[in-house]
Image (cartoon, rainbow, N blue to C red; front, side):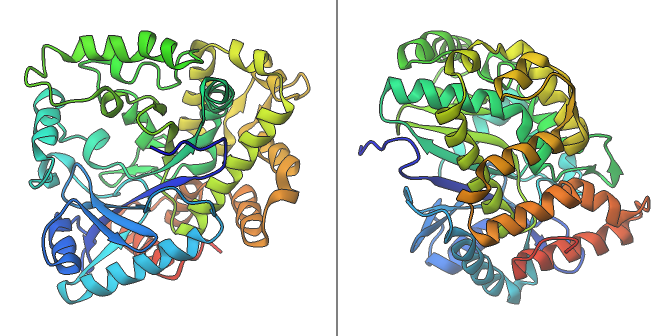
Length: 406
């Protein structure tokens, strides 16, 4: 395995729902898509710089960088080309991709179908332990960002910065305000259910914000060993692996020397996702180069979790009042909204951003998270017809790689 230094390469994963065009109902037919593309059902299809793969449930397909990439800026276009290709392949079957982190009308107890092909024994075991027919398993689409570290020294810096930025991320990326035709009260309903979807074995997700561990040895001792111990009674055939089981909001992948950020809801189009990814990368660079590492490392997950809960609830309108947290960023002693903190961070890194990223972020900072824009577009009318009309528009945004509400 080749090792890379901080920010030398990146990996991006985007998860999309497959739906029928007529009613936008989830369609558990990803196997048919992969068969049409590949001539056989495989769990991965390589398509140049982007790969397609199945997920736990049969209606979700993941698009990801085909190996580490050095250039994030060209990815919006690359992912968009693949989305157009998939929608073209699916068109004769009257199917299409739908963006956002949750389907607004899906009933997970009647509409969930697990993937039944390769790797299915792992999914079946997960289903036995956790019952995957719930929103937290079958109605959650996210963007994952994979960032490399070379050794313990780089891991320490990267993990310290990611842990502290993590609670703010839902305020930028929330896109899941509706479950089963009702406004849930949370701008990031996906993350709200993510926190508890493994309640049977709480050690798997911990407090979502990772513990203060800053070396490989400490990570194995404090995170992986308790996970391996807790899963033993359930996994007698030993088919689950600790990297796969760790469900914190950012997970260390020592099998590929990377940290994977998992708390980001999927946006309406790759342009939105990649602008957020580029922004996060530049903010993390700024944090590592400009902030006090020891101060970042001191922040306990118990102090960071209330901030995460606040952004899950209110996205950019969340009020952040922890003086210790704000001081770590060099902010004055007063409370801030999450939106104000992002504006402050935007000004710190704006000269590192290309024009498209800059414009996209300015649009999000001005008009709010995608959840906020969806709620505004629905205008208190939660009838199936109105939800259908708004999400039809979101499907068009995906096809055209344009921002919702622009």
